[in-house]
Image (tube, rainbow, N blue to C red):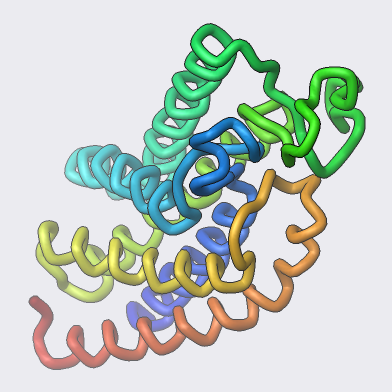
Length: 228
């Protein structure tokens, strides 16, 4: 029964990670020059930062309670706060230092606030900053990814007999496996759930399901051998 729950935690965590990564607003190097919407880094890097923050909060809560929902929620909130402050900091620099308005390059009107983008988009760019829809998408993505990482950690600690430090390292590795698979599926920049690339998500979910399943098999073998 423990191995079944372990498999569920790892696979569910991997699926949540993939969905969360696809919701991150990432503009890569162009975003650093204000010529693309999102954060000026790669998909895997920003996801890793959010996941580490979520794992810190999840591991802290896990030492105080065995409630899986509280652990998952703590990981989600930690990751969500990290992303929220990162996007806010980037927007402050874009608006006050560069003097540009956060707008999307993929849609003409914000799907949530209905604010028009075209009048504020700099010509020859693919948007800039983190507009409302991308900001909300990023927070939601971090929430899902953080809860996914926390589920993986919880499963390893409670059902695979991993020590807390090695469970954290292993959870980070499994998270990165899914994050990298999702990053290859995205293939560069993405603005959030309104981006056309988000429609590629089903393909990533299949890959992440298989990848997480393989990771769960190795975790179960380690558990069977006596844990770490």
